[in-house]
Amino acid sequence: MAEMKSFSLITGPWSPYVGDDLKNQGWTMEVAKAALESQGYQVTLRLVPWQRAVEESKQGMADALFLSYYVKEREQWYVFSDAIGQARTGFFALKSRHIRFQSLQDLKDLRIGLTRGAAVSPEFDSADFLKKEETAEDLGSIRKLLKKRIDLFAGPELVAKHFMQFELTIDQREKIEFIEPPLATHNLYLAISKNAKNFQQKRKDFNKGFKHITESGQYKRIINSHGF
Image (cartoon, rainbow, N blue to C red; front, side, top):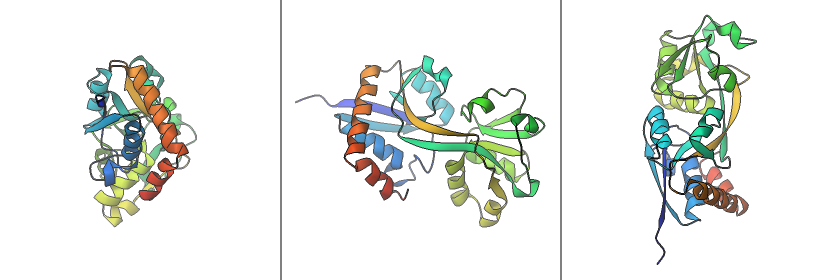
């Protein structure tokens, strides 16, 4: 009997994409699991704070950082799978502030919250003239925004809106807006650690499995079953 192969994923809770509070740990996890199981892998997921997920996956303590954006600097530690979805990132602000901008330079005097270790957009990430304040999780920045301890929160649109729906009151939600247009639209990848055993084969196998579930219609069925 062939030995069951293992594939370990690590990430931070990121509803509505992935999390223990979601059906089957979220649609992205169901997709990854279906793709990898079709190639004979047993799949596990650990949920930890995002920065810890980044550090542990770099070291090969997990095979892949799950739902990573492509960031050029990460190429020294990872190889990237085919994209399994997308996420828009941008700014959240209090509606009462009426904040609008033409360029990031317009925001240089504002305090901007973001999640520690997270990428927002290439332009934003490299903008060292901005006043950035990090928190452990997106929700921490949203609460700081409501208390006017920061002026903007920079992060993923659907994730923040999900937190707001379940963690804030209707009155609190009504005070916050997402500023259009977004800063960036990111593809979501498995960033497979170069310190993982057989990392190139793991990428090849995931991509093969992902192609299989896409062509069979299973990918679309999974997404539809989660209401997307």
